[in-house]
Picture 1 (cartoon, rainbow, N blue to C red):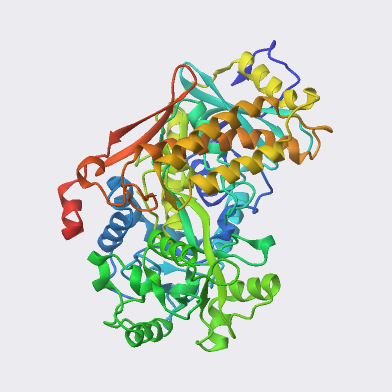
Picture 2 (cartoon, helix red, strand yellow):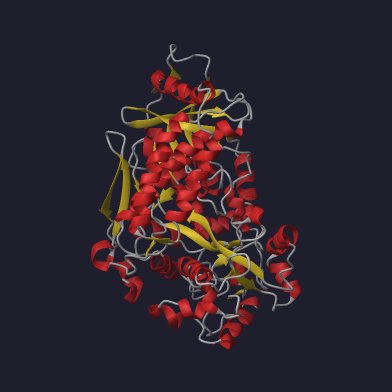
Length: 611
């Protein structure tokens, strides 16, 4: 691929077959697979290699290995995922995920990942909310870190070219297809172009749209917005997962993740009165899956600590994330919260050495950041914005979007998790679909012509956008706009939603969008965080509007989407329908619905009464 001579021949260019944007678990796995297929691969990351949000995934990777409970099979994993997603998942994606996750985990082990072990030397698995069997392969509570270490080493050994500290601001198109990307180096501010036969988006989530989030600074909806502006469809964006347990004190670490592994290892949730309140919030149709007494729950915890299977049902704290988050939010709202606006999570009743061995990161995190010894007393926790189930509509087999040449994997893609993601499924999702998407992109690139024309007009437009905030002189401070945006989303589009709040949010977002062209920053381009924020805010405004408009459209409560004015799940109107946001010809956002892919009869039979 070449740039036309008149298209600013001084612009740095790096032609590749497959360009992967994002170097977390999904991006690394896609790059490894594309390279193995013979493609020339470029891997772009906004930060440094290894500094990916995947490292913050602590609890484990979900796969039906059957090491602790031999009854666990892909069929039960399929059912749990579909039921957890309230049947809004793409069934083919869930089938592929459940079938292929065990092989992807074993592959990771073969590449050098060091997992915790059973007594007979196999990969140990722990229980997690919504999973009917102990299913999460883990490395203490540092599983994501080990995954990134392993994948990073594999990618470097494969000779994949990595472009660090580079931000992509637009995708380049020709003839309706994506043929590359334009961006800039964060270290110098200089523009850079990546001509590519196929582009894979693996940029993660949208957490920085909210004030309280477990997400790192990189999560500004970049891939979602890039795909949307290129003409791809975004689905299910109304489903934003608020993880039940983030730190609430001290203020500087508010929202920092407290892994579900604490509850998986036996952590108990109590309100300020000492009541174990989760008993009161179990869904009526699923109460039979949970322990009926403290004694039964204690029996289960003891058995799990010894990697034994017993008939006792799991504790109520291991209900699905959407349910636990709503329960905690309700306890706090009704005045039964902890001193700093959360609830208490207590695992101190277990032996101290066991807690430190199983949860080393959590022990260090609370000791160093909150001066709390979790082996001696409870933690204070509350909901934190964690994950978006929605994203780019993709083909289950290949990760291809609705725009030729554009692919997506990991959190930036939609369909796999339905209306609520089960803990641990994100790490197996990025392994399974990272590999599939890398292979799909490499095959597309192989079938593409050897040369393609990169439009110099699009490059010039990208360069003008980069220069505008620096040349504007007087204008709006981007940090003020960021604060106002996060306030709107946190107040009006949070755990519980109503039509009035959503309408107000849409109006506020319209005003915020009108302020974006007035953003101005001082200084130069070199290491200028305010300048970087300008382009991230453009992306956050896109995803915030998609979340809000689709939340207003969905007049029911399902999974992570809770409408106080429509508290019931509407099986007649909304079953098997995805919300869709796409860019209209006039540049506005239009929302609609489409039918889910049809589920094959043999898969439907696995759901039992749930279907």
